[in-house]
Length: 285
Ligand SMILES: Cc1cc2nc3c(=O)[nH]c(=O)nc-3n(C[C@H](O)[C@H](O)[C@H](O)COP(=O)(O)O)c2cc1C
Image (cartoon, rainbow, N blue to C red; front, side, top):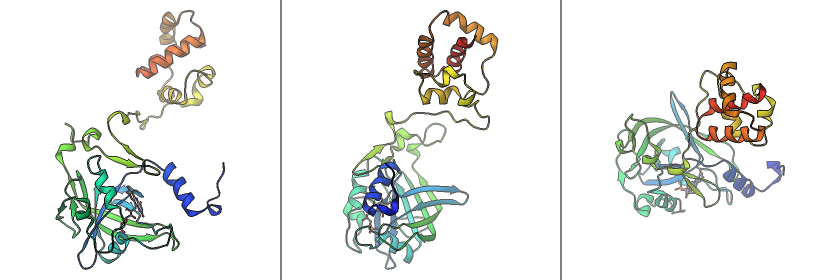
């Protein structure tokens, strides 16, 4: 199906975007109004866009149903400061509770049962139970439109970060199994960004792989190897040399193309990508 966004209802478009641009990280944004009353709400239109200067953006949008604005948006216009707290598996239900439309001036820290922790450089409070808290100043707010569903991009710069030592591995890097982040998907769906959900993809880095176009046709057009298999084979920096291929011929023997492709697929799954490519190339001898 093809969709022209100008031809479908805003709500339908919203569902399509939320379902396809996912999972999204969640900014648990703590703000205050000009009287100093705290507010806490989650926003998954959120990401980091630069580190020098640090740039975090989240969007408390205009409501699609009645074009009203959210307290968080009004607060950052009044007091341009925010603490963005990350949302973990342990506090996701409380973060969801804080998204309820409480009236102006209601403190969602109290409603959600989370603990207010004073900040160092800004006035809004931190969420004690969140393992990473970013104290930010709001550099600008970009209104993308004035109709229901339009975004209000709150562009933030980090003034102070708080990172719980308990989420770090022995090299001082954040360990996904310790921080236990969750992501927002479409509908009521969330996902866990830890445990069996985590897998690694080797970075191509500066020395690019040969590319799928350089693989012999029988590999490229294989009915057994998948796109992911080809992606790994083509990440190799140089094709195996003739000597290596000759040696591999002793393993491949007179096996058929199908059985060699199946064996290569198994080797790739075991992380032996170079061996797999060498074996596959015995078919070109
Ligand atoms: C996980 C999660 C993510 C959300 N993301 C957004 C978002 O990106 N933008 C938005 O306008 N509302 C989002 N919402 C809804 C707001 O949290 C909700 O409208 C809240 O009542 C706003 O509170 P406020 O009026 O106190 O600012 C989200 C809700 C949840 C539970």
